[in-house]
Amino acid sequence: MMEVCQFGEKNNLQKTKIIAAFAGTGKTYCAKKHENVLDFDYLFLKFSYEDELLKTKKFEELKGIKKGRSLNPQWPQNFITQLFENMQKYDVILIPANDEILSYLEENKLDYILCYPKVECKSIYMKRYLDRGTNQEWIQNMDKNFEEYVKGFDLLKCKKIILEQDETLEDKLIEMNYIKKL
Image (tube, rainbow, N blue to C red):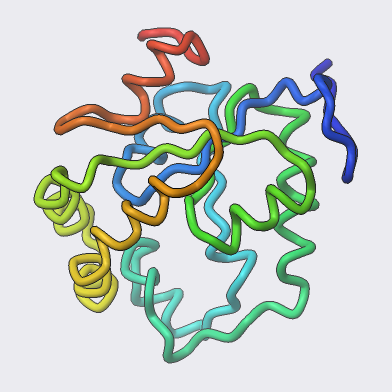
């Protein structure tokens, strides 16, 4: 059984590796391939969507949509609760890297590693977003702010994995012995 730290305790009991990874680094791909890895996206924890949107849009298309969604009143406690529950089930949990999520990790004294690409990789990531079917509004926002996001991550004082050109999160997790090469 995996040991888990409780809220507010920062110690060596946290066995699960939490990786806060930038969009397009390969969280979903890695989790589908490795059974001990969870792609823990918070979209449906943070927002409630109108039924029509859920029927007509794919998951990637829901990202960035503002009309037809509302903030879940249980947010962010539902995220933290489910994160702790999943820490008992997985060796590696992949979560989106954004300021709000990183703040929750810090507040709850959870160790994490931040994974993001070098700013020179922008064109590779823009193509990944298009290829996976992310909605245009979200892609336009990312195109406009990519460099700012990456430079902001560069300033953070935490453990980091910085991806080169075609490297993926899976490549680095294998290199770090967090997962096995299949």
